[in-house]
Image 1 (cartoon, rainbow, N blue to C red):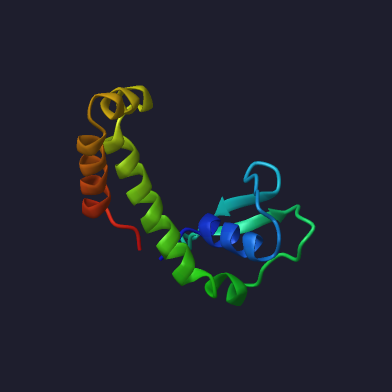
Image 2: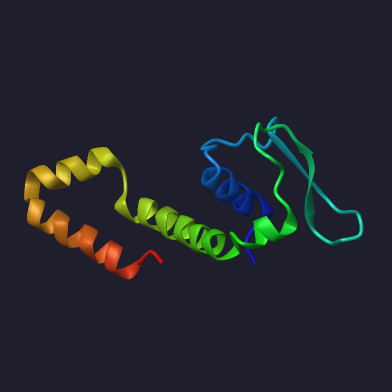
Length: 109
């Protein structure tokens, strides 16, 4: 199940809002009954989403979260950009093969 914040980002993006500040625009709070997070405060110029609207973004939000893990793994495996540039200068074909291997071993959804 996707995080509420991810579903909210997907909803906002679908409604023309590309940036959401979860300290000012949308305040989330955990339910004291253990039912998870909920929207405590909504300060955006678009309508606050219903549960059904957020649920409609569940699949896309799950994909986004999975891809974020892949992006992080790739970023770590790629290494420092300065070292990559040196690697490209020394042997671009070896660099290409290394990057392809990283991408092949960490595919996005």
